[in-house]
Length: 561
Image (tube, rainbow, N blue to C red; front, side, top):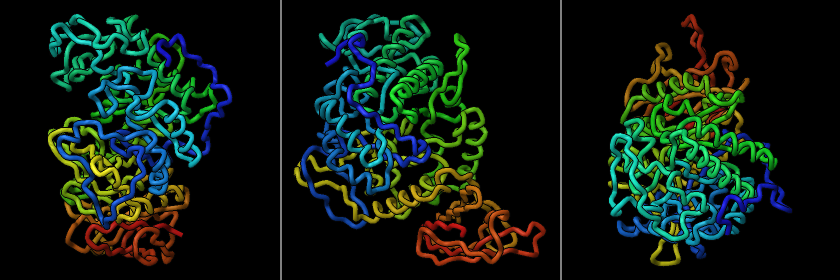
């Protein structure tokens, strides 16, 4: 095991043919995010049979402890992810953690895989297996903080106070953290726990609870730290051939540090022939919060252009979409979300509109009551929620268990981190490829792979009408929601009835420049027949539309010929 960054060989690994994967852009991916500890252990198990959904495994006590999931368990069940229609896997952090941690975000050894989850060789095997199935692998990495690797005096949890620095009392273990370069007290802020996560600079300088924040003040020590972190993660690209990183807690770091790190990583990946290395980050906040971290930047001390993150997780969409899909909110805020996205995309580079979208995640930062999308949702609404993401702008991400209708909810993170396997009986799992939700999401995800329009097309929300004359954007909670994706002369129209009880029959506008009156639109998802395109000659605009009838919570997709 390497213990110092000075031991790393950055030349290409002898005999290694790195996976270039130039045929697919990152915005084409359908990502499957799993927590390694919760997806599957190394045992051979059979899936329980159920028609619609399963609550997942784990009682209140089990969910706050390690479950026993492994990298080998993912290797053994990777066909499940492939058959769901996913083209990329995002793994929770795999590096050696503090012993009490199961989630991966409390790292004490950056140079090795946590033995509870497997070995570096297992990670290499997983990546190779994924590449053989044309699946990319992204690692979740943590640059903002380390694990709870040292203590303040008297092992007291100091709180942030006006930027004051506190002493580092002692390292918790004699030989951790690794690499040894991180055993330097000047590489940590040492300013105590964050109390107010919305206060700057507290939110960047303070500790995440007991996790220890790295120094990020622009000092020479913080610059040395950034170099160490970059070399650590270049090492893992060299060793395992991974295809991207998801950066945790980005808004708690400075934009220049992220931009410099991303450029270094991207350059190293290029040196190995990996041209599409994907870098995306977690930023809890509005679009403006993410702008300093995405796209091309010129750093003050350098005349060169640095490229930051390719994308970020679409947190604003996550907070709006659920209520619209469940019929609890008008689509006004959803439509406004995409308007805001367009404005902020102007300085984010070529693919600025394309963020990583999701309806479920593993921590739901800022929410007092944690719950999955499926909580208080029907299976049809779960499919519609994922269907919206799969068809809309962005790279959709499926959080493990959503495809089986997991309904976890409670006062902390553990309740939304259920197990896909039963730690008690050693025989069963819920990797059920015959459940209704799984099969519906799989059809939609494979449709996205097939249809270039859904990956690259422009997006327009569509006006609707009940009489074919008076058209407007929907402005009620339980409505008919429609949007189009357009690519050259192709149009795909997505329609959803958010009412859980009422049948909706309305007219929906389509593009007048690429469609013709009397032509047909084919239903490519759902049970509808072809629908003829009509024109209302009484209107000066002469707009084109189709008339559709949807059952409660029905989700349909149409395509022009």
